[in-house]
Length: 367
Image 1 (cartoon, helix red, strand yellow):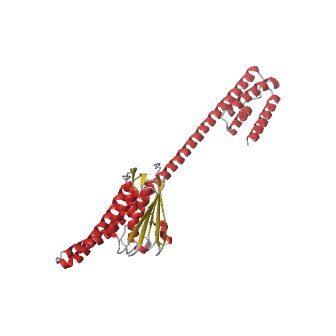
Image 2 (cartoon, rainbow, N blue to C red):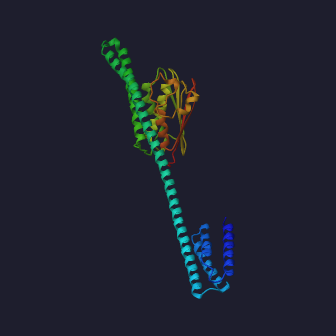
Image 3 (cartoon, one colour):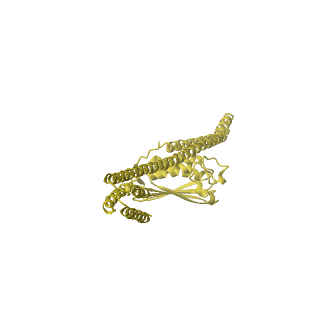
C-alpha cells in the first residue's frame, strides 16, 4: 500500500539522517543515502527516485553542517562529493529503470490490446465464415430440393400431356368428340400446372436476387379478381365454385397490380388444389379509404396445427398433402410479395375443415 511505502521511506530517511549527524564529517558517506534513494523502486511513479535524490542531497548537506567536526577538509569535501555523486547516479538509475518498466507495461498493454483485437477479428471472421458456410449449405440444399421437386413435378404433367396427345390421335370419329375434349382438358390442365411451377421458380429467383420491382398504380380491384377467377376456372375440380364478394370502392391506389395478381392467384390455386369436388371457395375484398383486406377461404383438407408455423418456409409441404402436386414455394413467395407492398398476411386452419387466409394492405403509399 502507498501509505506504508511512504512511512517506511520516511523512517529510513530519518534513521540515516540521525546517524549522519552523529558521525564526524570525515566519516559520513553516501552509501546510507543511496539506500534511501533506492526506495524509489518501491513507488509506481518513475519520478520518485529523483524526488528522493533531492531529499537525500538536502539531508547530506544539512548533515554536513550538523554533524561533529573532524577529519581533514579535503577528505570531508571528497566524502560529500562522493555522496552526492552516488545519490544522483542511483536516482537517475531508478528514474530510467522505472521509465523502462513503464514502457514495457505500455507495450504489454498494447500487445494485449492487439491480442484482444486480433481475437475479436478472428471471432468475427469465424462467425462470418460459419454464416457463409451455412448460407452455401442452404443454397446447396435448395438446389438439391429444387432438382428433386422440379424433376418430380414436371414428370407427372409431361407424362399426362404425352399420353393424352397420343390418345387424341386415336379418336377420329365424330362420336368420339367427348373423349377428345377430355384429353384436351387434361393437356390444358397439365400445361397450366407446368406454367404455375415455372412461375414459382421464376418468382423465387427474382426475389432471391433482388430483381423483383414494386410499381405503385391505381386499378380496379374487382376487375383484377374477376380476371384471376376466370383464368383459374380451367383448373377447378368437378363442380367446384368460386364465390366472390366485395365491399367498398372498386378502385384501389398505391398498390402493385402484378404482385397482387400473383398473391390472389397463389391463394386461389391452393384453395382449389386442396379442396374437394363440389366445394365452394370464397374470396372477398374490402376496400376502405386507406386499407384493403383480401380474404380467401376454403373448406378443404386444412393444415395440421403442429405444422402451421412452418407454412411460410421454402419448399415446406404439410404432411397431409404428399399425394397432391406442389412445390412448397407458393406461400413463401406470397408472403414476400405481400410484405414488399408493405402489407401482412395471416391464416387460420383446421384439418378437414379448411383454411382462411387474410391479406392486409395499405393504400397510403408509404412502403
